[in-house]
Amino acid sequence: EEEAAEVEEVAEEVEVEEVTEEVEAAPEAEAPPTEVEPAPEPTPVPDPPAVETPVIDLDPTIISPIR
Image 1 (cartoon, one colour):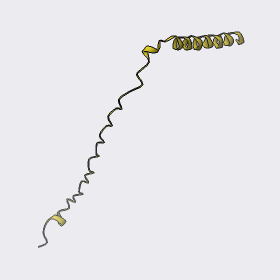
Image 2 (cartoon, helix red, strand yellow):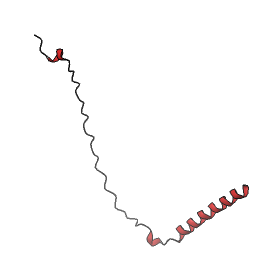
Image 3 (cartoon, one colour):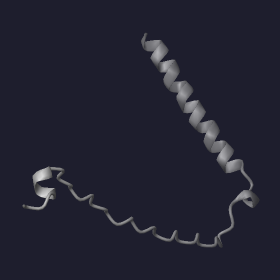
Image 4 (cartoon, rainbow, N blue to C red):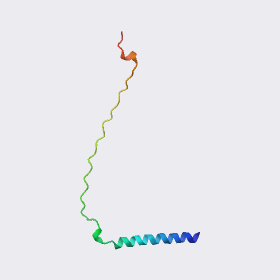
């Protein structure tokens, strides 16, 4: 089991080295231009006003006029 763990560790190290070599080998021409236009700031959308639904009491004694 210990040998298998060591083999996995070595394999991970090799993968990391391969990736770094690819990055170093990349031509500088592919690098993004340094002058990048600033992205326009998104206009903030105002939250809709909170509409409170009035509580309607349907008790007939309150709605009907007093006689």
